[in-house]
Structures are given as C-alpha cells and as structure tokens.
Image 1: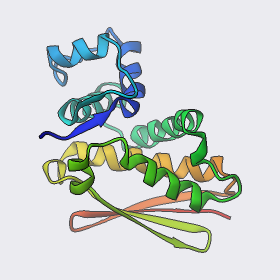
Image 2: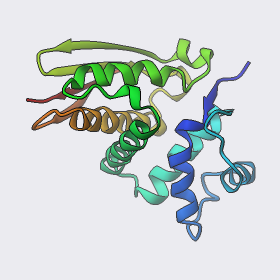
Image 3: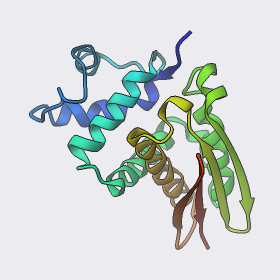
Image 4: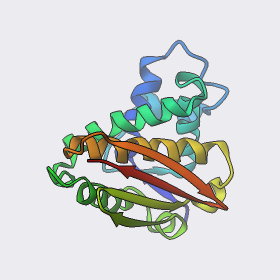
Length: 186
C-alpha cells in the first residue's frame, strides 16, 4: 500500500498554483497533477504522497523562487489556516501545548505507512520547544525535504505567536538525517 496524504495539507498548495496559472508548472507537475489541481481537492480525501511532494517542490520553485524564507512564510500562512479549521489545536497562553497538539494532529494528515516512516518527537523546555524530525526515507537529503522542514518550522513558529508567545524566535539544525526545529518565546 502506498503512502497517502489528506487533502487538508494540499489545499493551500493547490491555491498557490491556481492563483499563478500563467506560470510554467509543467517542469514540476504532471498532467495528472494538474488535473487534480484543477479539480476539487477534498480536505477529507486521501491523495498520493508523490503528488504532495511534487506540489510542494513546484510551489517552492515557481512561487517561492527556491527560497527557504518563502517556505517559512508559507508555513506561517498555513498555521493561520489550520487554526481556523482545527480550533482545538490552540491553547491560548501556552505555545508549547499548542505545538504539541499540532504535532499530534499532523500525524492524522498522513496514512499509517507515512506515520511509521517519519519519526517526530517533541522536547519541551522553559519557554521553548524542539521538534525533532526525521523525514521519510524516500525524501531524505532531497530538496523537497528542505521545503517540508522549513514549512514545518514556519508553522510551529507561527503557532507560538498565535498562542500568545512574545518575542518568538526559531531556528533549525540538521545532524545526520535528523532536524531539530526549535521555537522559543517570552
């Protein structure tokens, strides 16, 4: 059985492509991908992970100009949209619990095979949280891995802001195949 992703994580990416229809998407997206983009993406439906990866890379390249800052900003946008849909993620005044809830919810966006392939764990400190992330093997050490990690950093950073963290800062470090995404606040 192949890995699948929920439409929930595709909606914002698809919007990016639809808004920029005049751009050259053909270098990154297949005709089948474009048919999905031009169709209806259902938030509760399952889609192939390869489509998610191609779509993420395409938006990164075409809209984001291959900028990790654009991935981070996209993650920030995604955080706001996610809070609108999954209101129970937000624990006002508690950025750490908000991020933990997001990490738990995020697992439901991927089929079990992906959950087993991507290893994440959270470590809390005083006014800080670190998400340790080990990507699925087929995207490790690829450009799309970088896209996913910087977008994820943008999401957790912005969740800390939305939850009431002050002077929020974030950074990531890579050691071997694992990333440490750290967010701190006052």
